[in-house]
Length: 149
Image (cartoon, rainbow, N blue to C red; front, side, top):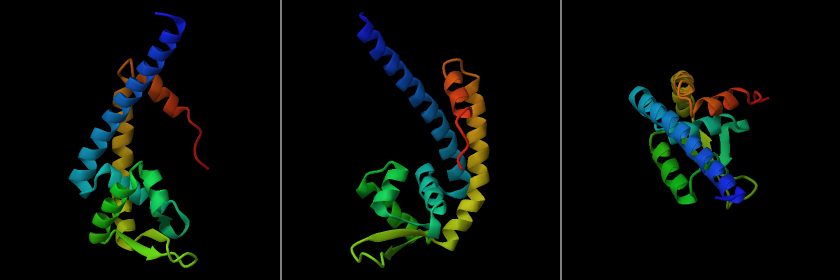
């Protein structure tokens, strides 16, 4: 194996470790959010993304990026959350073709109840992952990320 092959293998190994950590965290979050709040991880992610926006709304395209979903998957997800009264769709006042997705008061309330569960489970999952030698360096790197403003 040449130097180029070694670099490819290092990147591939890094990706496998990242995927393992992601899977570990997502499984723990999914289990807890479903059991305690009847929310999936992606539903939580959407509510959280909307809560961090001025006016609690985003265009569908922005929301798709925030949730790492395709446009059609985002539309289906928003429809489900809208049917539960957690989101609303509104027409953009400036561009009648644009549609915003907006967090409703019920969505905000559910998010407020779910956030402590999410944060606790995330902290516990990271602490567990830190005990796995392959995952520990990645968890350490996450802890060293600068705090958001």
